[in-house]
Length: 73
Image 1 (cartoon, rainbow, N blue to C red):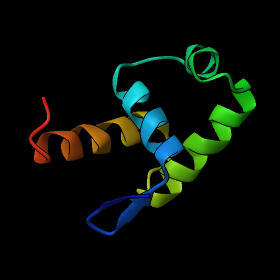
Image 2: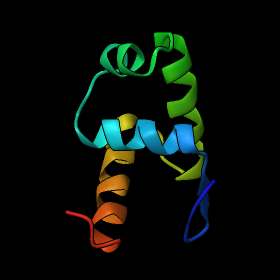
Image 3: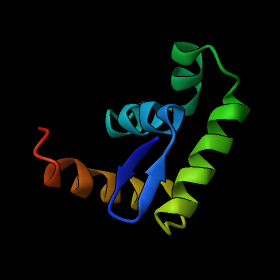
Image 4: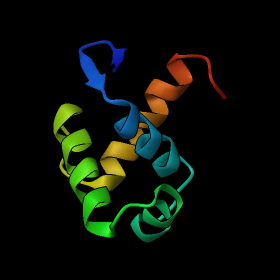
């Protein structure tokens, strides 16, 4: 599991988060990770809940802030 201040991401959630930061669509993420699109939606829903985000746009903004705060550009 990955720990960020107050948020724990599983390795799969982290993988999907990084692909979301690259603006990849669910279908492309699913193909890349050998998952169904529905599984990707499920993981994204869990990530949104962990970050208290209502939609994907807000989630990506939060992930970008976290990504920059970790010094990874």
